[in-house]
Image 1 (cartoon, rainbow, N blue to C red):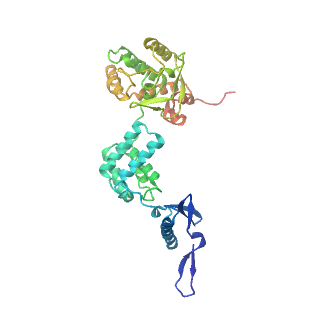
Image 2 (tube, rainbow, N blue to C red; image 1 turned 90 degrees about the horizontal axis):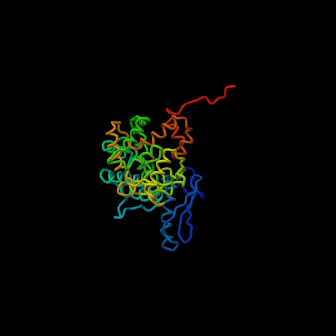
Image 3 (cartoon, rainbow, N blue to C red; image 1 turned 180 degrees about the vertical axis):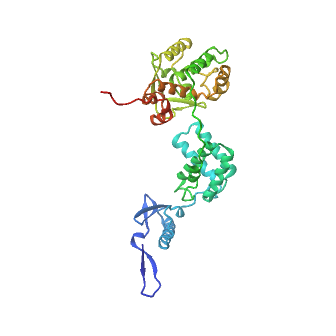
Length: 385
C-alpha cells in the first residue's frame, strides 16, 4: 500500500503509490474525484462546476483524501469528505428532522396509507419529545435508552415496530447524512421479544349464524346486515368490502372483483397491491341480488354505504354496531377481523385447499398455511395399491 524512499538507517517517508492517486475529472460540466483503494473504485462528486474556482476546491478535497489514504485514516463511507447535510436553520441535522425527511421519502416512494402515516407520526412525536439531538450523536447507548423509554410508553409489539422504522431510517440515510457507520437501532430491534399472543378464536357456525340474525333483526343496526353477510361469506378485509362498488360485481352476481380498499376515508389498492376475483357462494349471490333490486344503484355507487352515505368507517362500525350486537347475543367479543378469520378457518376445516383459499382471500399462501395449519386436515398423499 505504501512506497518508501530514503536509505538504510534513514527515516522512511510513506508516499502514495500510483493506484492510490486521486484524479480530478470533468463530468458533464461538474468536477468529481476518482481513485482506487484496496482494489475498489471510488467516485466522489465535489459539488462544484468545472471552472477555476471549482478546480481550487476540488484540489483541496483531493489533497485531504490523499492525506488520509497515506496515513491510514481513509473513510470508506466517504461521509468525511462530503459537505455536512444541515437542517433548515443551518445546524447539524437532528434526529426528528432526519426522520421527517425519511417519512417524506417513503411517502413519495410507497404512497403510504393513512394507517402507516399515523405510525410514522407517532415515532416523530416521541423523537421530538425524547431524542431531539444531532443525528450523528446517536450511539447504541442512546438508542437503547430511547428503546427503554418506548417500552414504558407503549406495548412491546408497538415499540418494536417503531424501532424497525428507526432502523430503516438509518439504513436509508447511510451515505447521505452524517450518522454513525453502524446502525445503532438494529440491536434494539433484536433485543425486544414480544410475549406470544393467544391465537384469535374463530366464531363457531352457531355464533356466525346468530350474528347474522342479530344484525338482520336489529332495529338500529340492520343496515349493516348485507355488509356483515358479505364479510362472513367471502373472507374479505373490512376495507375491501367498504370500498366495493356495484361495477365490481359481475352481471349475474357470481363473481366480484377485489382490487381496491377504503381506509380512513382514503381509497387505495388492496393490502397486497394485487387484484383478485372471488367466486361467490349462493347465499351471498342471493343477498346481493335482493340488495340490488331494492336500491337500483348506479355502477359507481358503493355496495355497502354507511347509514348516512359514504364508505363505512371500520372504527365507527366496530364501536357502534359490532360490539353492541355481540353484547346483546352474549357472544365473547372479537374484532370485526374475526369474520375474515372465521371464513378462512371454516373453509380450510371443510376441506378446501389452502392455495385456493389463499387466492380467493388475497392471502400469502405460505403465511396462510403457517397460520392455519391446525385446522387443515392432514391426509396421506400416497395411493393404496
